[in-house]
Amino acid sequence: MEVTIKTTSGTVEKDLSQPSAKDEVVETLKKSGWIIIKGGATISCDASVARDNKVTILPSLCLHFAKIAQYAVAILPHANERFRYSTYGTLPPEAVPDPPVTRPEQWKDYANNTEIVAVATFHLQGDPESTWKWGYDKCLKGEQLGDEELVYPSGGDLIICNAWLARRLVPKPQGDIKLNFIYVNYAA
Image 1 (cartoon, rainbow, N blue to C red):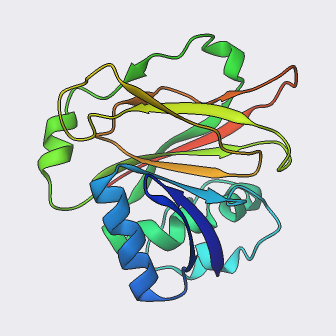
Image 2 (tube, helix red, strand yellow):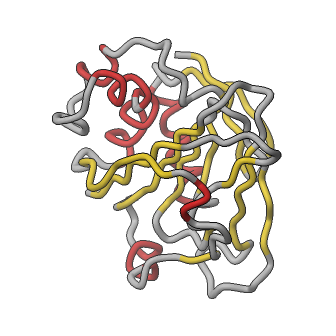
């Protein structure tokens, strides 16, 4: 399960079938609050990954959702075996025309926890030539600074965010194309 992962410190290749690679990805989510798995939102993948993991994350969703969630399903139980999906759906980005940089009220509790206890994932539609815009506050686990770092993932990418991260509520496609995304939120 070779993947390319973009983080605050650059882009790395990881084999998510290896526990040591999962450890590194989990540590990145704990420290920087986000990762992007390049091509991680594609559906041409092995659904058995979702079915064979120890955790029941998407029991009521169709196979399409199980396939696109395979990378989150591979990583999240490694971070906290109690993870379950909490909410999911699709959203046209124009539904939130100017998404704010925000975080949940209980973000400090999340940030002070030694385990990752909640994440948001965004499965971006489009091909690798499609560009999306998403941002987060550079404060990371501190009080918001109002200093936003912008990230430009591609169509087919998967964004995974730790719940404490002050971030744009939703990513936005760039240009004139109309693209949706699928969101799945997980909590332990």
